[in-house]
Length: 373
Ligand SMILES: Cc1cc2nc3c(=O)[nH]c(=O)nc-3n(C[C@H](O)[C@H](O)[C@H](O)COP(=O)(O)OP(=O)(O)OC[C@H]3O[C@@H](n4cnc5c(N)ncnc54)[C@H](O)[C@@H]3O)c2cc1C
Image 1 (spheres, rainbow, N blue to C red):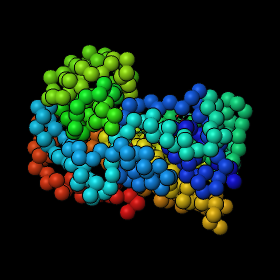
Image 2 (cartoon, rainbow, N blue to C red; image 1 turned 90 degrees about the horizontal axis):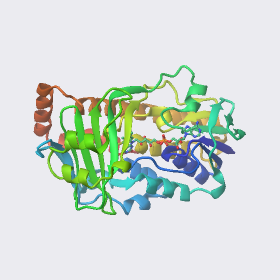
Image 3 (cartoon, protein in one colour; image 1 turned 120 degrees about the vertical axis):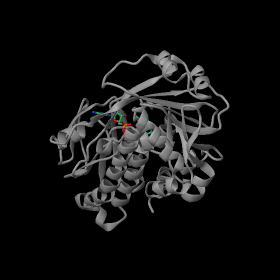
């Protein structure tokens, strides 16, 4: 049995690993000339680390685990609004890690057979019968996995009436600093602006900044970041001093309204193509990894029923859609509150956060982080 995977991002590569391990021949079609991993750092929560365990790759990220790092949410003066600590997180839910995206992509690629990846191939359309049309001709499979991101061509061609991604009203910068001594993972909430940072295992610090903005607005690079965040608590100004302007990534943030199904005929959607979500819970890639594991489980060729692809994909849809859509909705809600800009609302929000017992915070995360339950 053969699967054509459209997209060689984290979701597509993970799906390919999961399917190869279940006995499938896999062909990955990736438009980029080579696999690059846009985006500096990536938080992988315990649910994602467990998904990687299931793909045989958990050790890669465990080596980079965030252990003994305190974290939480602060206000712009550095006062704690909510605190978590990674030892407690580890005890309750398992290991969390912050990795460089490139390291995860490389680990996934290394787990695949060499023949499966075709780069420099742009897909133009996919059909429910398993045919894929692309810049190098066509491919066909018993299964087509649309893992081609938020602007998915697979989704647009098989679900022509699906809603378009929606801009959520804010944009994000991502960056890596030069190595420096930081031992906390903090997100600082201001008014319509946020700044977050977490140390990577190699001493560099992954930082992100978020600001309310018009869709498509240009940004002013490091100078703008200094203007917005340079007066916030330490180490934020020092982190900005340790970043090169040329390394900044800037993206408008979109999510995808819920789809009524992730499967049609032989085609299945996975990752951002199925459920692009705001980055506010750091769960987009984590959910793509969960998708990949569940897809592999449903389509295990060693199980007699797995040859019935369409039936197996219905099981995938039922297992994945409600969970991914709930997390996407929650992520959007958290982002909306975090980006409040009116002074009274922000005061109220910060006070409520400060009064919230830690246990409530941890309990609210349990359904997301304890996957598969
Ligand atoms: C600012 C920001 C911070 C984030 N932080 C986190 C985080 O900390 N933790 C987390 O879990 N998630 C995070 N995410 C979300 C995460 O980045 C995504 O959910 C994840 O990368 C989705 O992976 P994917 O493989 O589904 O899609 P993508 O990464 O978009 O990959 C799609 C692939 O398909 C290829 N492709 C697209 N179209 C075609 C075509 N027509 N033909 C062939 N190939 C094609 C693309 O080149 C790409 O390689 C963040 C997102 C943002 C924007």
